[in-house]
Amino acid sequence: MKRRVVVTGLGAVTPLGVGAAPLHERWAEGKSGIADRAGACRDFDPGEFLSVKEVRRLDRFAQFALVAAGEAIAQAGWGEGPPYDSMRIGCVIATGIGGQATVEAQLDVLRERGPRMVSPLGIPQYMPNAAAAAVSMKYHLQGQTFGVVSACSGGAHALGCALRMIQYGDADAAVVGGSEATLTPFAFACFDRMEALSPTGISRPFDLRRDGFVMGEGSGVLVLEEASAAQARGATILGELAGYGSTADAYHLTAPAPDGRPAARAIELALNDAGLTPEGVDYVNAHGTSTQLNDAAETRALKVALGEERARRIPVSSTKSAIGHLLGAAGAVEAVATIETLRTRVIPPTLGYEVPDPELDLDYVPGEARPLLPSNGGPPAAISNSFAFGGHNVTLVIKGPPV
Amino acid sequence: MPAVTVEQVEARVIETLASFGPDADQITRSSTFEELDIDSLDLVELAQVVEDEYGVVLKGEDMKELRTVGDATDMIVSRAE
Image (cartoon, rainbow over all chains, first blue to last red):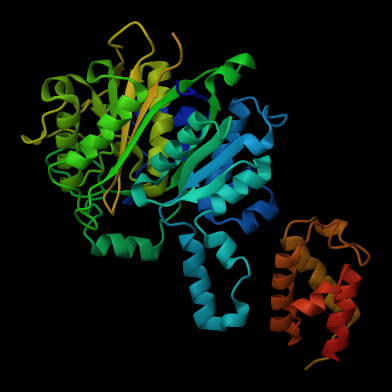
């Protein structure tokens, strides 16, 4: 029998503010963190949370992760130090790109002042594993520690890696998440030239008028623990990471496979891993990017995996409608939002969804938040999807806290 | 190059080190880099400031011998002369 993995801590830095609770609460209230074509963490002041040395040594993406990890670790009650052998605590933090702002700034130094003036911190700040390294060092986590890189599926892949690590017995706990800070001129230019970004700056997943994603920044971090150990130490269980499935489209560099079949397979694998049937799914936290292609392919994937009838009855909403697309952080931030949704039983709406696309006929939770009604007497369950450039598909199955 | 004084260099070294993390008022001539939590990466950055301002090139080997703020200051002053 598989070891079960529960969530005991949540942390987030998002365009809706610093904290996991504000992310869900403000989204459920219909508030958006998007302005001027971006989901920026405008209120984030790293000096409020981190030392001068930490701020200097870390790119913004790693700063976000360190702050989110601090919140999650405090909530888990690890303030006095982790309750497990540090060598048996993993740390996996994904990013889509890494320290992009550092690269751009140091390229300016290189061109303007020459190679001798390039910072020795350039690579350690830029490297995509910098966030994992920073969290591991600050909290003395000495189990398997690494970054995960799979573009917009990174955060979800990180959770999958950590889940397997604990299920398999390689670790008893893990601090896991994703982080991204790419609101830079170069990243905007690149995504713009791909015509991936919304020219109107409006994130309205599944709406007929959707015209691209809005880039956001931030981080989500979770503390995972093996279930019996967490119970034995009296930890508050916030939810369960119950299943993980992942496939690849092997289709196109940036476009999803239109039939959604590889993505559907990821959903099926995750449900099997969790021992759940489509009847047991109470909510879908969609990848829902607000691009024409993603939202259509994801809708097809949900129908294939869950069955058309069942798929139509499950509420589907997209966190990206409120904060934009956090790329490699998205899967982790959305897992945090999903746990809060299951825990509070309040489903936030897909903001901006007003004009239905006749091709997309699921229940995208228009308008206002609504109560989550579990299909059975046990903890409610949700799936959270992440799909990436490169054709990487990940689905997580997440359950609410014990009833 | 204008002559540099020990006092000027020491003030600049302390100012630079303070920007790396430790409080400026904690840093004295006898402070060790170890107690200030200044590591090899910080020293490379210090060397860049020194090279930029005083034209003194400090290499990794030079820095290895430095233990205190005073050591660094003296080396910079002697090479700038």
